[in-house]
Length: 528
DNA sequence: TCTGGGGTCCTAGGACCC
DNA sequence: TCTGGGGTCCTAGGACCC
Image (tube, rainbow, N blue to C red; front, side, top):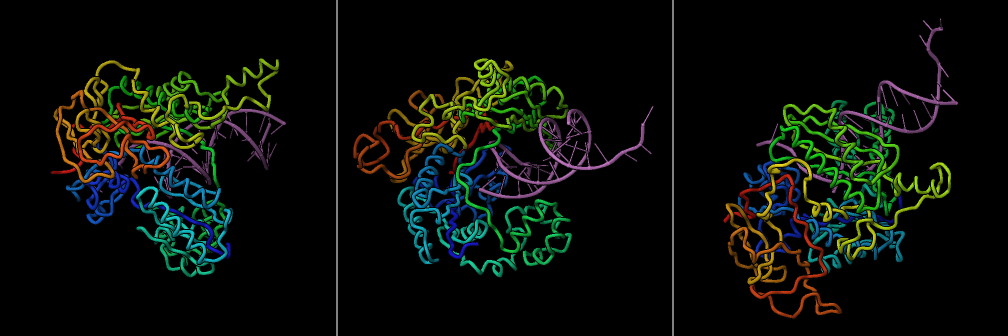
């Protein structure tokens, strides 16, 4: 445990929802819910205005609508969130090269590894406040900061700081701070572990520490028990680790209604295998074990896996393995979810091994095989500004672009050819009225609100869903590009709804998600 | 109120090998 | 031709996190 609180945890406040409010002036100060809008969707993030009504993440969207019918319900725009996240991570890297992102909106920073490590708690606090100011200036969003001598405490501090605050935990005080808290505050204690502990009469962190390591190991198993004992006694030496290679890639879809037709199930597995490989290749990786996931009508979930002789990134190989795995799964009764994943990731493929072996006239044992350079899927502007960032969803856009089910004939259920899907919240451009976003759609119509992050709240117009003047667009940046070195927008024109702005090259195109499970036939972003 | 999608890590049993 | 023992790999499932 360090003497100075130099581990920083940043957590953006209601990230997705805040980004939407920053992007859409008409939603500021109003309840906003971002998540899946289909019949089986769940809430990803609720704005603080929506939380007042009891809406929270992981809740089914249906329930959220009952609790808060007047909120704006929006489908996530990951390309925007990634863009903002990148900007925030960049600010963090100015503090220290040791930045460990946990998700798009959360990260640890080890200030001790930075150019100006704070020597006192007060100095650490100042660094944290400067960061918060910089984040707000750069993104217009707020983040909460926790500073402590360990990861666990830093994270608990930022939680405590929410929203829009900063909390420092002085090293030395952690044990007494933790003692009265419920066991659930410890990372790694979820519902199941908490219940185990409760049955053993353990409800607080203090009681956990009092139980002793041996007892916790007996209750929870070796690894879990001893690591939780350490945390309960305030010991947490986990280092901040930048750059972790991902160990698996997977995609899955929950269907609006259970699938019964076996042919359709095969078709979906084939489609998912294709998407999975697209993501795999975009990350410049290949994998050796193919995993099929099936969730049945009753929510029971099973996985089947097959390990190949060597790592592959060949769509045909992955597809065939996935289909073989499906052969052995009984799907009578209906399928709610299908997933295809690949694990055992490597930076080379079996084909590389063979090629190498051929070159050397030896068996494929040679240690130095051709390592893939950068993300393989870099061909389009997709990865654009970011040189190599294999881990995350670098492939998202590509994955979505690769639409066709390839498989079975007939209507593929969700997306009909021809009529476009207008997802609530997503960006559009109208030839005459300019930039806006979809407020709702259905019955062959689409309602668009014409406004931009820096404009006044805009007005709404309705069009036919197949209006050729209307097209999907990329999300505009949240902060208006200053008249700086590279003006992205043509002129210094003041906003107003109409007027055609030039498309924004600084932003990657928003992938429209065609065949995706959700087919919100009559959905609307906000109630009238 | 029927429960998303993307991950990580751990456990346990059986096969197989020495 | 009664049941050793350890290590590694594969498979399946489960808990947890954001």
